Structures are given as structure tokens and as C-alpha cells.
Amino acid sequence: MSDDSEQTLPRVLIIDDSRMVRASIIRHIRDRFEVREEVDGEAGWQTLMVDPTIQAVITDIGMPNLDGYGLLERIRGSRISRINTLPVVVISGDDEPDVRVRAKSAGATDFISKSIGNVELLARLEALTQLARTQRDLEESRAALASASPVDPSSGLATPSYLHYHAAQELSLAQRRHADVSVMVIEIDHFDALVARYGAHVAQLVNRKLSKILATKLRQEDTVAELAPARFAVVSPSTNMDGACAFAMRLRTAFDHIVMTYREERIRIQITIGLAATTPGAVQTVSHLIGVAMERIASGRAAGGNRVVGADGEVTQDMVVEQPVRAQVSIDQILARLRTTGLDASLRKQLPDAIRTLLPLLELIESELPSGLPLAALARAAETGSKMEQKND
Image (cartoon, rainbow, N blue to C red; front, side):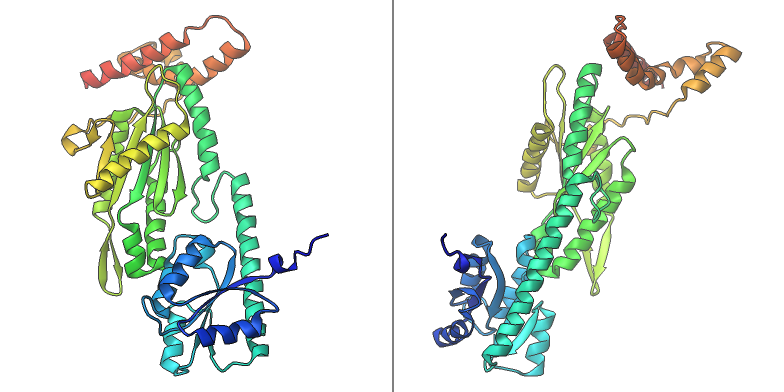
């Protein structure tokens, strides 16, 4: 049996421009830890980006290219969870209280002197790496739980896996009904700059603000999920490109009026939205529609952001066709009125919505008891009736 003990040792990254300091630390911990070393903060940051096995960082403060404070800012502001949660130990020859306070404020997990003994150094590192392993296991457990649940516990929105599952059902249903489905991908503009300027916690507040607005603005039948930090997807059944454009413009306008205040500085939030919708007769997947919407976001981002981009390019307010909101209808109420007053003009106007309400039941009946129900003709009649009603209005 091969000896894998060296491979199972926790890996620590040591960053210091002094070769002697690095050698001294390595000598103290090499029996308990695997070590990588770098000469400055910039090199250390590049190593963190490419090496996912690092479980803790020991860094000096005064270094060329990128000092310890700058490195801490990058680590804590990273959008990669394995990096922004890493334990970071600042080791410095300057034990002044203001240096210690600044390091802690920048996100240092611990602060030690370069004259620390090897027993204490080992004890602190072992405690920190054990904490890091526990946190990582907890995050993996949460991710597994979230993947099995339709709701993301942190945002209250649908999970991405549920969004794909539910949207696939809606697409299948829409193809049978000859109906529409639209996908909207929403991205907060310049999110990385927000993180760099104000810190990760402020950027998270902005992200949470968008989550709450989406949760309150959407219809009950819409499904929204957070695909990544600052990026959300909305799947809207029975909504064509015109309807998606109208809603996207309202949403973007709502964000134009939001101003957040942080340390007396006003932060304006802007979003770019990419839209995609099903094409009649084409078999499309959720991933394809999201991919199309993402391409349109990239186009809007390249044009400066704060834009809505649809199938024909940027959407402007004068291009939007506002569609009236269809009222929910009760079949029981329609039948009661039909028995008491007969078919009048008011009831006739509700027939297209009644057809749309009954279609899922009729489809189920046709699938279980095939009888040649004209489902496609009924769907077309409902759509034609709605358009005539809009024209008369």
C-alpha cells in the first residue's frame, strides 16, 4: 500500500518577501503542513486563484507589488467562496496596536508576531485549518440541501436546478398549447467595481435588494433564481417577447430610482437585462434560452450597461407595447352567471380567459381519454379573442 500521508496534509500558502522569514516558518510547520510560498501579494493572489487545495494563508504586511492589506481586500472581496472564506493569518514584525487593528478590519483571521514560538504557531494554524474544513463541509451540506429543495434558503428564490426543471415543464406545456415562454436574465452593472470600492458586504446588500424586488414584482406563475452573484434568471410562461420587453423596461426603470447610502456616499444601482423567447415551431431548451439572453446581456454590457436587449437589439421605451393584465377568472362564477343571466357582452369578453384557464384540464382529459378535442384550435381562439378585445379597448 502506498503512503499517501503527505498528500493529506493541510496546505498552507506563505507570502513574504523575505526568504529567511519564509524558511523559518516552513521549518516550524513542515511536519504538520504542506507548504507553498510566494514572494509578494500579487504572486500569492495568482496562486490562490489556481490552487483550490490551499486551506490557510500566512502573509506579511509590507511587500512589493501588492501588500498584505491589498491582498486581504482581494481575498475578502472575492466572488469565489473557497477564497473569500479562507483563514488569513497576518505575520508581522511590527506589533503596533494600529497595525493589528487595521489588519483585523481588513479581514485578517489572526495576527501574530514573527517572533512567535513554533508550538503556538502550530496550535493556531491547526485550529484555523480545522475551522476551514468544518466551514467547507457545512457549505457542501448546504449546497446539497439546496439542490434537493426548490427554494434557496439564503435568497428565498428558486434554486437554479428547480428553475431548469420547472422551466422544462413549462416549455413542454407551451409547445403543446402553441403558447409562449420568455426568459429574462438580469445582471447588476459593474458588480465587480462595487465589490472593489465598497467591499463584499455592501455588494451583497445590493444583490439582496435585487432579490427582494424581483420577488415582489413577478407574477405567481413566474419562476426566478439566482444563477450567480449579481445575475438572476426569470422564466415567464404565457409571455411573448413584447410582454417580456414591457416588464423588463418597468423593472429597469424601478432600479433607476433606487439609491442606497453607505457611509454618506450615495450608490446608484443599474441593471442590464437580456431577453429570449420561444419561437413558434422550434424545439428549444431552457439552457438555450438562457444562453441567448446571456449573449444579449453581453451586448448591452459592451454598450455601457443599463440597457434592455431583446431579439432586435436594444429595447427603448417607445418600442414597448404594454399588454393589459389578464384578470383571473373563476369557472364556477362564469357557470353561475351563465345559468342566471345567460351569455351577455361582459361574459363574452371573459371567454378567452376561460379557455386559457380550462386548457390544462382539457389537455389532461385528452391525454387520459383521447376524444379528438381541438386543443390547438381552442388555444388560437383564445389568443384571437384577446387581440380583438385589446383592439376594441
